[in-house]
Length: 136
Image 1 (cartoon, rainbow, N blue to C red):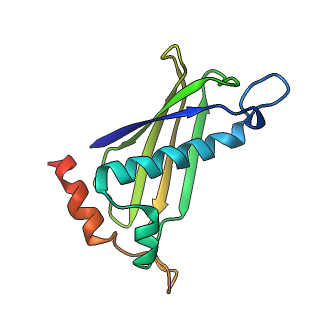
Image 2 (cartoon, rainbow, N blue to C red):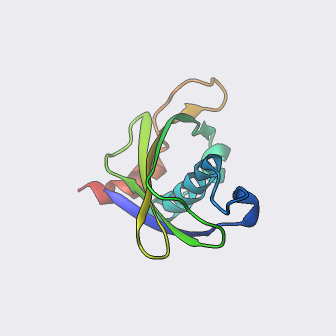
């Protein structure tokens, strides 16, 4: 298992008139955290994978809202990968507010896809060799 924490400050444009984060913006927070998590754990960026011909689209996303996130709060987004990826990769998320209260739980499932054929494929070997250490 590996996990990573990312800090995200809520911007005004992400909120409604009540200063509460609009639910659609959580997908962006997951993306920011997931990207940083992958680079920190595997040493490989999305850009590198794409240059190698591998895309990683979202297959599924589920989110549960426990408390609102508010304008100008600094949120901690924890990305957690509990199982060694295969063709699919599941990432769980926990979002905490500045009081360290859990305000959101979610998960996404992504699929490794060959950029040319648009078909599912195995993850890049360099990615896998770098993250295997977390599953020993």
